[in-house]
Structures are given as structure tokens and as C-alpha cells.
Image 1 (cartoon, rainbow, N blue to C red):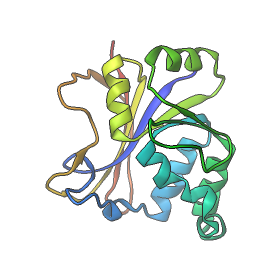
Image 2: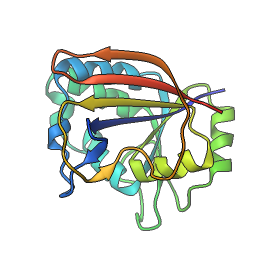
Image 3: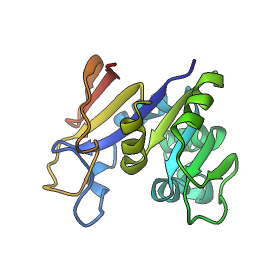
Image 4: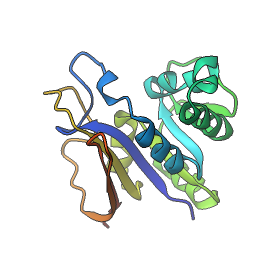
Length: 186
């Protein structure tokens, strides 16, 4: 059975974007980007909310990342090769290949995808992940903490949800970022 993994790049104070919606402070170094590529490489399906999907489409719709630095071109290739499921009530149609739209997030449907998948699923976007955390269907939480405190904004982890976590792995990078990989306790 595949695992459902939440992966987020967050500030040290736990935000994926600041109060103005900016996340430019989270741009990874080449070392961190290559590490994220290796995390994403075995993923068969990405699950996104509309906003995260629209942010990520650049990996297919903009030729710059695919032709730029080696780590960016590598991620573009990984992203294009994976299936994408976008949960949105407003997005009329996908703008990328291998993408389908679901109008509602149904935890049982995601469980079914996990049960039948031979590759892991990665959920992106704090809002969608919060729904999955509340439903108890996320197996792992992987955080890349960036050495900056932004003082507020969108939280990486949901409020009013208790998560008992078991540390599985960690790594420190030259730029001061830290990777933490946790199994979600049951």
C-alpha cells in the first residue's frame, strides 16, 4: 500500500507563507532542491488544492524551469511525469497533463487511491493537508524548515489537531535549513 505524505517548506516559526502571502524566503538552495527532487522522485500522484496547483503549474507551463538549472529541470521532469489530482470547486479545467479535477475532498476516495497505488502520494498545500490530517489519512509529515521567522501567515500544520509524531529521519543543510521526517502516530 502506498503512503500519503505531506511535504512542506516552512519558516522556523511554522508558516508556509507570510502574512502578505509571500514565500520568496523559502526558495531552496541547489542542495535543498536536489534533496526535494529525491523526495519527490518516487511519488506517483500529487494531491493539491487549487492555489497550490496553480503555483506548481509553472513546472509544466513555463519553459524556464525545465530549461534552467539542472535541479530545476530535474524537478520539472519529475512533476510532469506524475499524476495530479486537484481539489477545487472553481477551477474549470486542468491546465497541465496527467491532471484531473475533483470537486470535493473525499478521504475515503483518497484511502482507495492509496490502497490501489504502487507509488506514494504527496499532498501539497496546507489547507488541503489540514483536511487530510483531520481525517487521519496522512502517514508521514516531512518538513523542510528554513532559517527565517516570518512572524505570521499561513500555518504549515493545522490548528486544533493533535499529531503524535515519531521521528524517522532528519538532515541539516549548508544554508541552515533542516529536514524533519515524521511518521504520524495512531
